[in-house]
Length: 286
Image 1 (spheres, helix red, strand yellow):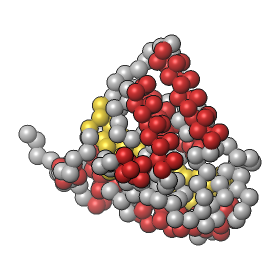
Image 2 (cartoon, one colour):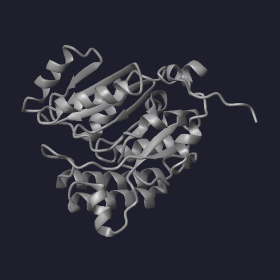
Image 3 (cartoon, one colour):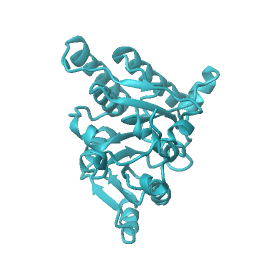
Image 4 (cartoon, rainbow, N blue to C red):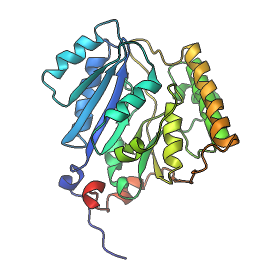
């Protein structure tokens, strides 16, 4: 076996990251989100950007972002003329990203991604890092771990089960933080503009034959402001899209180019094992 060189800090910091977020009336959270995003991104790289979409807020969200831009050249503000929702915002933010890897995190910082920097060496072995919520010990624990309320937790579970059963996507979570190579996710054509956007991104990169490595990213309860992601109409539209694209892509075989990717599940030795690999930018490696 060839000897493997350990990762150096200098080598790890060659990677660049685009963090994506979108906000609708989040004046209570957006400033702290920017502070947390800056600290988090600096822990991973010297080369990063934060793309924040203001989804036609009517409060001070946009003004606060503009104020923070004055001393943060890496902060990019994009403004929607009217409210478009998560699916459209994800597609728009993905198209605007310029760094080597991208991921998105809700403005209320819904997921604990503290393990992600430690997992970066795994990019030497896998294409995509996929977060997942910890396995529950009971039904009540399941609903608690999935979202802020039992109702929202139930919606999340149903969404996941529909995607898992209909599309046979072997991941433990399809609504979490995912670290994609920008070139890969920008190469697929995204079609939906609903909450189905996360599963669509996962499915279409999975169908390219990409390799996934899961890492733990527990759900964090919202502390301030009001979530607007589980309004009844949004749920109906997301369910409609799941069924529509299942029928179009699977039943009618509308995606004949489907390859099968690979998934490596999490184990506690993953980070330790990955640390022996030399991590360099895929661009520079090519």
